[in-house]
Image 1 (cartoon, helix red, strand yellow):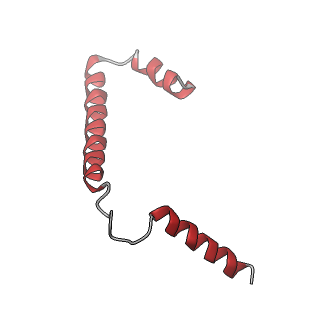
Image 2: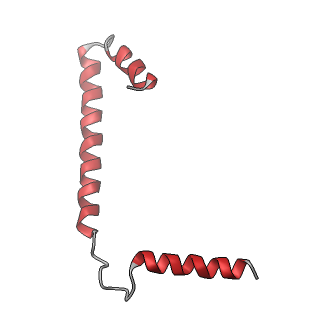
Image 3: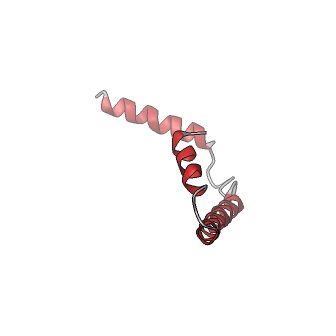
Length: 73
């Protein structure tokens, strides 16, 4: 556990129940939002497959090689 996390926990231990409920609600909303974003992104994984004729890594390697060639001239 990080020092910052421990400090937060120490502060949480001194809060009133109403304050804890507000914090819990915020945390749950944040987690829900993150899960929704991940779910949306998961729908697009692999959706570009077959669009290009070459492998993505091969394409990136080729672009980097061209960039190195151009910068050394």
